[in-house]
Length: 212
Image 1 (cartoon, rainbow, N blue to C red):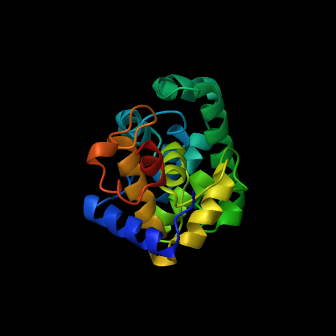
Image 2 (cartoon, rainbow, N blue to C red):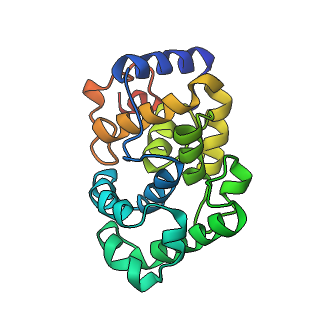
C-alpha cells in the first residue's frame, strides 16, 4: 500500500532521525574510480569491493590503463567480486568508450553514462549523485525492497520504483534518501526476518502494518 503525502513526510523524517549522517559506502577518489567500483558492486558487497579496489586503482589509475587490458589480465584482480568474466569485459569496454568518446573523462549526464557498456540506470545514478552532486535515486536491491515495503513505492520493477520515489520524495532529498534507505535495508529491514520491532519507521510502514 502506497503511503499518502503525510505518510511520506513522516517516513522521511523518521529516516532522517534514524540515519542523520549517511554517505556512499564505496570508497572512491573521483568519478572514474566510483564508476568502476559501482560496476564491481553488482551482486557483491561494498565491503568486498573496497578490499579489491585500492590495489586495482594503484596499478591502473586511469581509463586508458584499463582500456589497454585484456579480460584475462583483469579477471584475476576482480575475481573475488563475483561474475568477474562479465565485469572484466564490461569495465574494459566502458573504459575504451571513455577514452575514445569522452577524452578519458566520465560523462555527467544519464544519457551519456548509460551509453557506456555495462552501465545501467542504477550505476549511472550512483555516479551522478556521489561524483557530480546531481539529485538521483539509485534503486539497488535494498532500496527496491525497503521502499516497496514501507510504501514509498508500490512497483514490481526497479524502473517503476525509481519513478515513484522521484515523484514521492522532494528532489533535494533524493540522494540522501537513497543512502538512508540502503542503511535501513542493511541494518534493520533485511530480506528475511526484518527487525520491525526496533525500526524507526514501524508506525508508518505498510509492511509492519500488515504484520500487526
